[in-house]
Image (tube, rainbow, N blue to C red; front, side, top):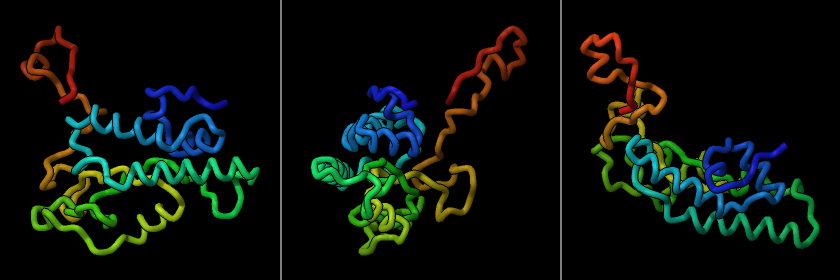
Length: 181
């Protein structure tokens, strides 16, 4: 069965769950985009994204919803040629992929302000499949690293790794609390 399409749930769906819900008519691409951008804002302290929401995201979500409505209105099968399971699914890409109209820094100060004149193959194929590219993810400079701590935009914070509090670091055996930083 499918999950409830509540505003909070939309932001926790996997790409496969979002695609299934879109194709079943349980939500819209615009609703998924809104949930994704709300989640981006509420997790800003993690420094996972560089810049904000791409200017093209809303237009791409609207276009996806229009395509879906046209197919439904004409009675065409959702699996008809030209339709894609990614159509309307919000996706973020690393900042080393060139996205038309969006700055690309690859995590480096050297590329600050660079807006590429071309689109990368991966993002062109995602767009052709109807995916909604929401934003760009922070990364180690030029992809040289694996911990996302060496970026011109600052380190990413892993929300799943709890670090000990001061009490824990001081050896207080009665303290079992930890906090995310």
